[in-house]
Image (cartoon, rainbow, N blue to C red; front, side, top):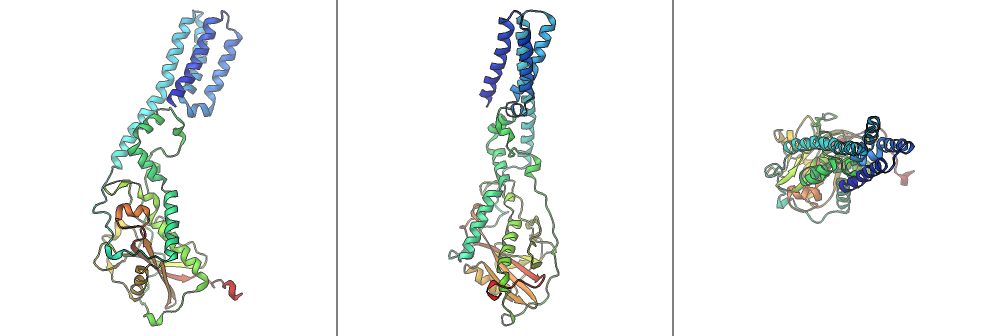
Length: 374
């Protein structure tokens, strides 16, 4: 685009000087040329895509008026038009230089980091390669969401790997300036949130013999709630740019950025993270907030209760969800499995069991009647 800008400015400069040199009495043609230049300079598209051309189109009419008022020869106009050209390129260059300084500050604030010590590797015992159809379908949905939503990762990639491209675009020589992937504090920063558990924590859990069947008509609601929870917790934008395990820029510890309680029929009461990677035995993190990893390392833990023990064994065999009715509540354990992006930092293979969400749910209202019973 720099070359294109040079071509356009050369055409404008040559046209103006040709008229000034060849016509003894430019008159109306000069006036018409001024109007054309002003129109081009005022064009939002031209100014946005080729800033030097837009500025020159604005400065040339001024040069023409100054030259005409002096009643001197065309050489004066040549000098004025050349000065206008230099200024037209200098303005976006100064702006680009300032932008580059801003990029340097962002690189210092969000440097490449190693995930060693921050992101535990998958244990061999946690690997399960025979996944249920439901688990495979959820993994596919998560991969699609991650690829579609992690534009922040592309911004970090440009910041660290495409410094020349950013330099050219922000010096005003390309349509890339219009793409909303130029690094800035606003599109790199993710605000940390602490979201309180929405309901009371249960103090009693039944034994397997006391568990009832979940409400079958709400199976789609359970599934959607777990989908929402994984996306809100993992938040694909928080991955940043992952070049490899030792070169990650902009990673934000996993945390809930919103409450996964969009179901018409189910009310989320508590949601706890079952950790499998940091402890010898599975542990449940206990927090007054929905799980966020920067808090959980210092949070108390407890062993699995009877429901979680049975449910986790099912998830380790490749199942996706385990749901029961327990003491008037709905208990659900949902698998958190390694997606394509997770593998880079956690090792292992796609589909490895990284952890699980332990839910306590209540039914808001009378559940819908299944179609087969209507």
